[in-house]
Length: 232
Length: 378
Ligand SMILES: Nc1ncnc2c1ncn2[C@@H]1O[C@H](COP(=O)(O)OP(=O)(O)OP(=O)(O)O)[C@@H](O)[C@H]1O
Ligand SMILES: [Mg+2]
Image 1 (cartoon, rainbow over the protein chains, first blue to last red):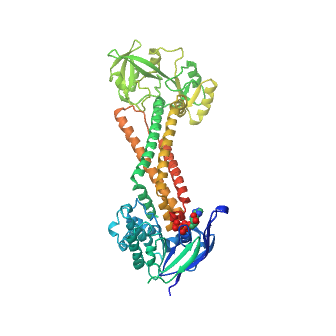
Image 2 (cartoon, rainbow over the protein chains, first blue to last red):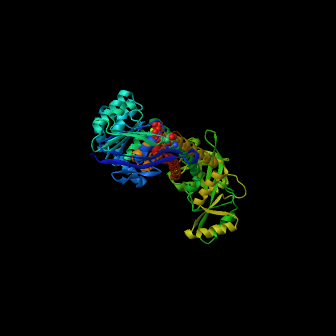
Image 3 (cartoon, rainbow over the protein chains, first blue to last red):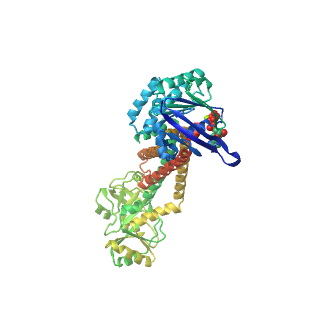
């Protein structure tokens, strides 16, 4: 049995006060193991992004805790948290957020630059990861010259370049057609996931459910169902 | 850290349109400002040309004098009284006045005539041709070889002219240290010849030039002269007095000040605005950087670096452009009044620093406020 990567305990998050208060996430607890691809699904506004953000050290919960390798990440200060994200977590944002004025390879190298790697080494390492996602030939183009699916892969390369053990995907296939979405997820499942890593995916897209080991369903900030041991 | 700055640099420079707009804004502002203030500095320097050229330590004059050319003649007893002040090594008169020459071709030309004390010739110019003693020769005048000399039909030693029915002969050609402001030629002669040839009011000495025995006597001399109802000031103070006259009494100073402020405001708004749009355009990416693990202070460093780099480059371009302009202008107009002073450069530098601080402040504020969570939510 693989080790537990993340433990969420009684996470609560609300926005606003009084009348206009929204209980975005209400007492949610669950665990993710290394080697697992964990899907978070649910209707719009059910609190998926909010939960994901609390799990990855981006949004402070009102109460509850997130343990990653037995560290309560919300007991860290802001700078420690930033370092923690830099070293342990890879993000793939829904809108990629690639810098249009940098080349593709420079975009991919950014986490390494933030880790104070030497520029040339960072670029070299980034090239390796672009090669892994099959885009070495596009390395010196600006990302806007690439297709949506290719940009998504660039974003994945950027998330992986610092070799984090937790990968976070928010709606990775929302702006892709069915085929490209499936291809990306198949790639993530076969080439990125291993027993030392876990992948946490937020999605609406039931076409990619087949790539999930575990699916957690949310509604109105609450967990309604967890299905485990799905894919093989 | 170098990697971060490299990223910041690329983000800035690769956005060619915005970078160009930023540079143009700052370059333009610096250029205008340095240009304005150098012209003004040039005018001021020229306005005091006679003071620096004569080189006397203390100048005594009527208190109502505003510029060298507008001297108010003083009665002769002032000179005698000054000579008897303890601490005065010597005191000699200086004549400064305007006259009209009739040239050989029959053309009339205004000139400034400086009459040097007959015995000491204090304030004598450095000669390029002729001997200073020739100034004592009959009808002897020395002409200053400045940019105006051609208005006297390029005289040489021996050229004659007429001055109020007196004959005048050029006996020497003097080197000029500072050109005057008024665009007319200058002649030197002796004090006595000057007051003899040029009709004037009852009083004759325009200035009394004084050399103190020691530096520390200056204060007493000033005081004694003030008691007589006249003004004694050092050459430096005289230059300042003239500068202040042009700065505060003529409107030139105010106009230059306005222009400088306007160019500053225009530069500030163009660059501030452009930098702000630049930050806004990249805001979600900065948010993504934060999410990935960039610390706030790293983002601040990136932005400050971008602002500082643009400001300094614009400063360099602006100053360079200005120097080039002045150089070109001086090639065509040798008398073009413009000097780039360190004060002007310092002021322009201060201005771009303010622009950089202002721009990075608005950028930093924006970037510090952005929550990575908002980037996540799209
Ligand atoms: N910053 C905020 N201020 C106020 N309310 C917020 C804020 N962020 C989220 N919410 C509210 O919290 C609830 C959960 O939002 P969240 O973005 O987590 O939903 P989601 O499941 O990710 O939805 P979607 O599928 O549309 O992305 C929503 O009702 C939303 O309006
Ligand atoms: Mg969402």
